[in-house]
Image 1 (tube, rainbow, N blue to C red):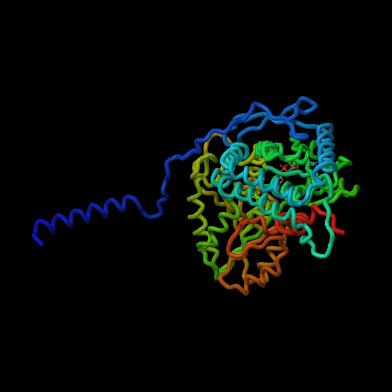
Image 2: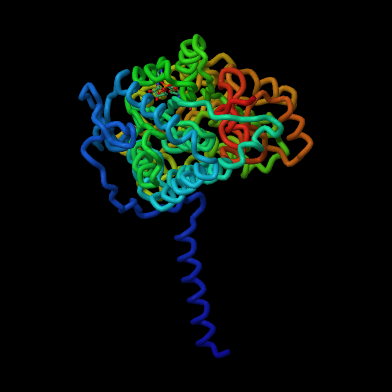
Length: 504
Ligand code: NAI
Ligand code: MG
């Protein structure tokens, strides 16, 4: 090699090294340019109820505003329905039940469900955008989690429609009749799918009341039912608030109520419906624990904890809102958790890079703020990720409380926001006692590299769903539901069909 060439090579090396150090300096988070979803979804200025296969105006002529929680902008207006609208919907559902739906073979019902599932897949982008605009959840979640699961629930239950004899082998099963279904705002279309798909597969007809905050995708689903040629009156969608839901619960023509929402309203509904012969299923709140043992893969566990509580702004009934860490790894877990939380991108839910979107409504935003304020007076240590939040809309930076007493409100109450409560334990027995020390029993997560420990701990936990070395994973084939004040009845899987069948 000549002298000249050597000098040249050295210079290039230096240049490359300089460029690389500029790109990945220690602890730096890569910033992406904004990537907002550009597709526009067609939205009418107002929507009526879907009753008997038609969109009809509410009898009172009253409408409610449906706003985008990320911007405060008015999206559209939806019907504020009363008992008389509910009555029309129940009558339409009864007519469809006796005249058409209960007479169809399971195979024919299945064909409609398969058709609905395929149209959902075809229109999934539009549905995901609408879900994000209406409810504030990040587009990557509505697109990659909610919508695939919505379609999956229709596909899965479509497959059961002609196989109901195998739901309880040796027993005869029959549809129930008209089902009233009331759903919340955290997974609007997913909750509609969890309720509608099994009910239809089992031969029932439906009156569904979506949450007042997020009714738009359910109304789109009504359009899809029409597009699929579903007979008129088999699915009816009536929008409104608590009073509308109460009218559905009280209606004498309804054979079953399926409710997902707050424990308080669930208890109230159970008291009302308990005086009648209506069947009931309840999916209520939670205060679920993620348990990290010292032998766990800490990086994966920390990622799972982040997904468990900060996914969907913590608006998840089974959110891992309590973290129990084995004392010997507390410091390292907290250090890694802070580092990971600093990387969470909070902002425009329609941006494909956003991890944490808008809090669903002003009421929920105020509730989170007030619980956190109260939490700060109840001892322990508080930490919140330092991120810049949009100036408009309802945004809350992810945060946690450490070492509060077991009686502190944050460690007992369902916050339904990006707020984590952290405590420590020393033995598996103590972890189980602490995890079960709650009025709820919806879910739990166990993190350990030792299989026998996971099985032993899981056996002691009073929770409907237990994840091992993962969290917040859902599947239409797997039953979901709670113990204690988290409700009763299961949704999904073979178990999810039972509440919609009379077993003889
Ligand atoms: P909510 O329980 O009041 O609302 C859920 C659904 O029930 C909505 O469709 C609502 O219109 C309906 N509803 C309300 N009152 C009713 C009544 N008397 N009879 C029949 N239906 C009625 O929940 P909300 O007020 O939206 O949220 C309050 C708290 O509940 C949240 O902060 C959160 O902690 C918890 N929550 C829990 C959910 C879960 O999946 N476990 C879902 C939503 C909220
Ligand atoms: Mg309420």
